Image (cartoon, rainbow, N blue to C red; front, top):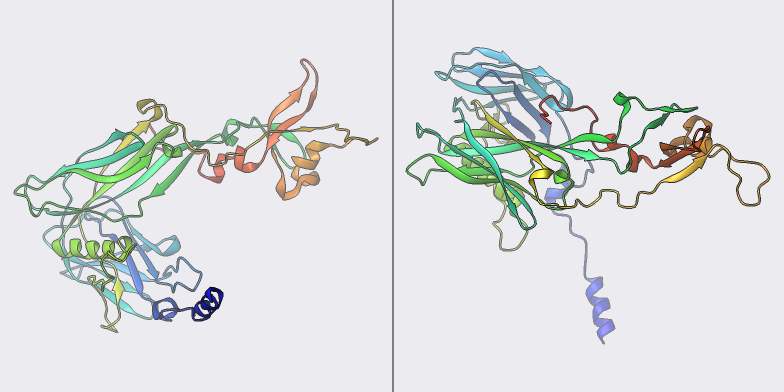
Length: 389
């Protein structure tokens, strides 16, 4: 009876693809802030994609994008790669309001005119050590009590090391000593924030934000293994802009259980001029951005051990002359496993250190897979200009 019940139950289960997964329509997504100061303005345009499409990014290319003030003065943005549109410092006057104009070729979009709202300076970015990692916070205040709503994001960079330090490189035919510019042991990896970070002092008598959580890391993260830096960016928001970001946060980050809020319509301040009923995702703000960068070194932290990204790395020995068991003719393992133009092919190992007798010729090299030797697979071996150590 139990088996019969289970069979009938399973036979009643049918796949359900809600309309949101297969809906053919796409909507414009506008990301960015018009920087009113001397820093550059970056606006990113894309279209939404259906969950079943298999595509994650759908940039809008070759659009005509500009900033316009309420006196019809136009500041054009220049197209860049991947749907980004850029302008050097605009140095906008706070006496005017501004909007964004977007012409995609098929549609015309405008944001509402919004005032310039500049962010006060970030007072501090700091971290606290916990039993299993660190928490990073920021603090700010506005002595004029003008700004009551805030948003933050950040970019982070950290040093990574390969499992083995390679002193040699193959040019395809021969193994040569690696130059300093070719070093692949130490790299810098970067990432950007993905969560929406908001804060408000509207309920306080003074415009003060203290102990604002930015991000956290566990003690086993490779970000903390050597040197880490975070650049925190702070934006001032109007009340309407704050409500937009709070709604977006609720819809994208707080939908994990039956007790979370139900999704709701996200209303921004960007609209289609040709189709007023078309949803446009995004909220345009205008103002200068405050930033602050800190560095954290492993020497400042407890003696934590990072979890290896590639825990099973091993060194093999590859010889120029090697006799396999029972073979009468030798095999050149360096060609077979390292020199990619002479037999190793796409799966070539990277030489690490020479194998030699004291005072004698090099007999071969220790070697390992690129994942274990080449840090540029996860970062860049060019030191960032802002790195201080």
